[in-house]
Image 1 (spheres, helix red, strand yellow):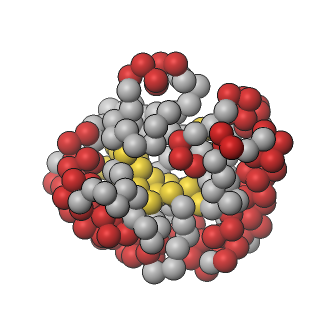
Image 2 (image 1 turned 30 degrees about the vertical axis):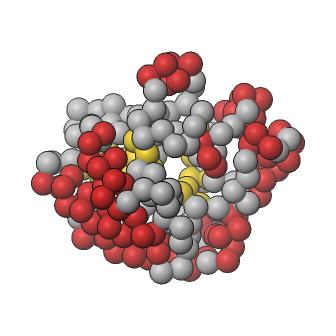
Amino acid sequence: MSCYWVKTNVLIKKLFSHYIWAIPNAENKIYLTFDDGPTPEITEWVLEELEKYNAKATFFCIGNNIEKHPEIFAKIVTNGHSIGNHTFNHLNSWKTSTKEYLENVNLCESSILNLKSTILNLQSKLFRPPYGKIKMAQSKRLRQLGYKIIMWDVLSADFDTRISPEKCLENVLKNVKSGSIIVFHDSIKAFPNLEYTLPKALQYWAAKGFVCDSIK
């Protein structure tokens, strides 16, 4: 599955129906997600932008970044956003054995629980595979462990330095509908596109009556 698709092919979603690609609803809710953080200054900027619109989101965090920046992770949680597992070291599933991959996911989960337990005593069972890649055996085992594998139907491509900020904004405004799961990245690489796109997208969605909610 290519991580460069802006809108996921319908056939792929049917073939991998055990993943969550969207969350249909009658309340005009959409689901913003942010991968790869927490990242100093960038994640905090994202939180400030979301707060302006009372928007909630889901942050798929890298365990190593959680341990480096626990205060930012705590801010995500206390601001009422959801947390997801994005492995401890941003592993490429296709290049990693199932045993090593599961151990890395568990290591990230431990980082999440060690800090969340001091705040809300909640467990995170949302998972997004880095690069949108995951082997069937790894997926099956994670689902057996109770994880929901969260994919997307709209990719901002903010991480792609070959596209302009204007194109990034077009990607999300053109393709979002009620129930959409949208992928952004609170990372240094993505920030030039994210900084331009997120405020404008939030303003547009608010004007159109969309409600930004977190994934539970």
